[in-house]
Length: 77
Image (cartoon, rainbow, N blue to C red; front, side, top):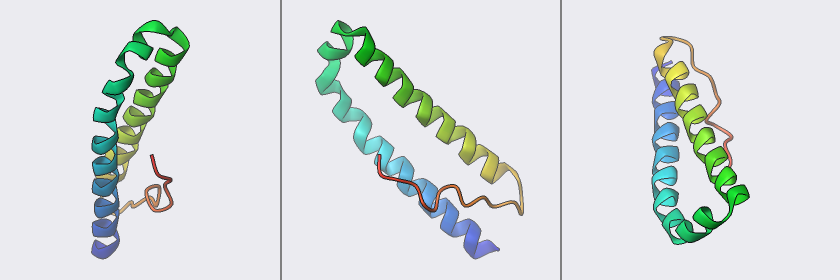
């Protein structure tokens, strides 16, 4: 059980690293976001997905003994 929880935590941290690496690169599209409402909506959905990921992470780690394998087969951002 502890090993699975540790592996899940490591996977979660790896995902946060990936997210942290991608977000700064979005600055290069600043003018595009300002000029195009549809593109801005895509950015909004992107951040909504990140928030949903946070909620899933909280669910996994707030339930002792209840490990979900949601993070195991995630795709790249």
